[in-house]
Image (cartoon, rainbow, N blue to C red; front, side, top):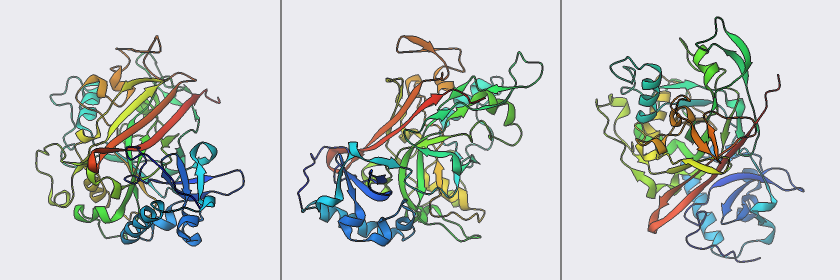
Length: 393
């Protein structure tokens, strides 16, 4: 037995306690919590092999909100006393895995700044940069759950059809306009029966936690394919998430009001905890910070996104993930996608002494973030890291 000491101001102190899945050279993947730079095996700490000696969080999440509250309290009590030696591993000595078995995946488009910037880029002659439906509902598309990967997984440059202004006909080949989207992802802990709905006021009972999310995007493939039905191959090749799921229960100190929603949303998008979250993201490109997107600027809240996702009776399930869409603020240095940051490639940025627009082979992108916690503390989300490998064509 031993007593663990973690500084009160650590991003992964008792005020955070995110969940993940780890393995060692001698063990299969198991559920853990991060405390400082320690990875704590929950099956050992809490004596619950059935729930936590597993390779994903899904069994635990399916037990529901009351159980999430009780386990968080039990972990906090246990870490304040002596901890079994066999429960403790050094972060640097374990392998981290995808924390959830992703059941389904939807990506939203919840930033007015991002949507407006893309509208100005692609529809410069329109009176309004936003499409007519944008302020009436959280716009989204259904993505590919099987291509969500954990931080540190290399990303192979995708190939597909594209047609640039100079091309007489579509051509096939590796994407030449490979991009990122710095997003926040939300993990559904418990779902709804088909035909039922999760209201805005019920969302907190269903949302388990938050991850960082990089929706890698092949802009040239996307531009050719997405009219009239929407993104497909330009998005479905890979999305990277952070290995630690920060519980919604840890984010009480990060609650903020969403921006004013005008026109007033329909009734099913009103009421309940529709607040946003004050999360500060950071985008690093080859070791250089190029953007700091503020999640507090997002127009639609997580509760509103979940309510809209299920309003038609679509069933949400344990392990579903929905992402916010690109997080962007009003300033250029707050844009969460390189297509915005470089204004479609017309305004290159300098990265490590080189002028850059879109991603080249060998480039590494790292998303990180922090949020306020009670008592003037801050909590961390870990990293969503990926390196671009050449196309396999």
